[in-house]
Length: 195
Ligand SMILES: CC(C)(COP(=O)(O)OP(=O)(O)OC[C@H]1O[C@@H](n2cnc3c(N)ncnc32)[C@H](O)[C@@H]1OP(=O)(O)O)[C@@H](O)C(=O)NCCC(=O)NCCS
Image 1 (tube, protein in one colour):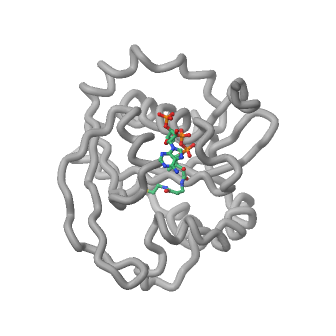
Image 2 (image 1 turned 90 degrees about the horizontal axis):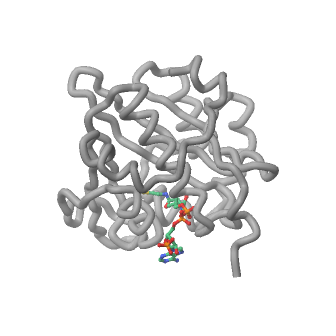
């Protein structure tokens, strides 16, 4: 049976300070801690605090993931942008668990990669993901990311060492893949002005 949300439009707009309050509620979700390894993050700051700090910095771009009539459901970012090497690290979070596994993450990622390679003219986007985050892995592979390396026993979560996959996509493979992508909807004007 088709998902009742499958026809909803997914789009990105710049993340605003006013979004942080809603994001603070995501910190209560244990699944997020598990997938982001928040218990090994010794900064003591919440997910929303972390995004608030990044909003002030020039080499990070953060967008709110908006879905049709549902509204703001998540955040996606290109962080540590290195303009000289033309690369950045991608992070994504669908904050409300009710909207995970419905295809929104995949659609938001494709929009982000389009911005990264077409507008920001980056050459390479990479990410790190825990080996057990199968939903995220599926989503990344479908968007064209490839596994580049396994960082073994690099971080501890829940008292155990965990492996992390380093994955990447470059602009050439993105351009090959994009013919399979659904058309990018019109971009929010505020997004264009933030690039
Ligand atoms: C990772 C994330 C962004 C993916 O977005 P999403 O909207 O949930 O993912 P999608 O629905 O687009 O795609 C998920 C894929 O995994 C599959 N999937 C869903 N739940 C799954 C599960 N529990 N185990 C394995 N696969 C699963 C889906 O079927 C889909 O694959 P398919 O379309 O080929 O069937 C989102 O789940 C999320 O924010 N998770 C919590 C935070 C997180 O893990 N961030 C990434 C850290 S690296």
